[in-house]
Length: 302
Image: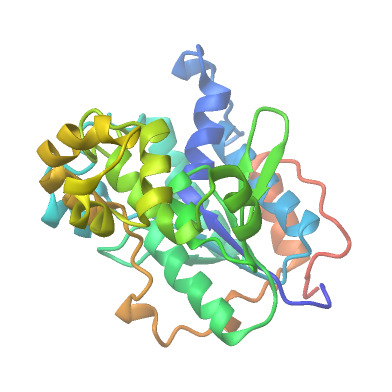
């Protein structure tokens, strides 16, 4: 077990769905991997193997897998009925593997959190803030969702998967890459929007324009307060900004991660301590026909 406490927060469906689609691309459903019980395991295999590798690589002492509520139940849907409305229905093998993943993690002792009507991003935001307030160790977020950049600090790092590697973003590396503080990322998102979530943003404004606007004015609130005096070369965006003001303000509200969840205010970080039963882990992974190299330093209780 690690000498220093370290928390891993996993955006569960982000990892599971990426694993599923990466291993099912151009393959008919009948060709997807199954175990002897007939359970689909192609995405689940990627999920479990990656989870244990992260725990080992980053000397994790605490781990939580976070899950979204169904999109129709999301709090943001009440604010904006079209939120995530453009997303396709999930393939049945992926739904089955999500259900099996929840059961497997519960069986082997990995903490999971799902808090209706909040989304996984919100849970990650609330728990990372609690972790920083109550401990002195690092927090690692595993997700390819750039929305989570707004949570980065000197102690909270996001691990983003690339083709053959991973990129780590903390507060310093984010500033070096984008020229902004992580807290300003939500203002960039307010202008750019998000097609995957159907967040409109400001029509006609892309990231190349949004970044210097927020760097110059600090926030969308400050930007709109000074919109009449905006100077070249940013002045070319003025008409678009005025036409899209309501959409931009709505988009910031939709993009902001909720870090104060009443149901999690009294959550005990101790519930996230890794305490795995080696026999149960081996038995479950064998049943699923998933091979994982389990490091000796993992926090097994037996």
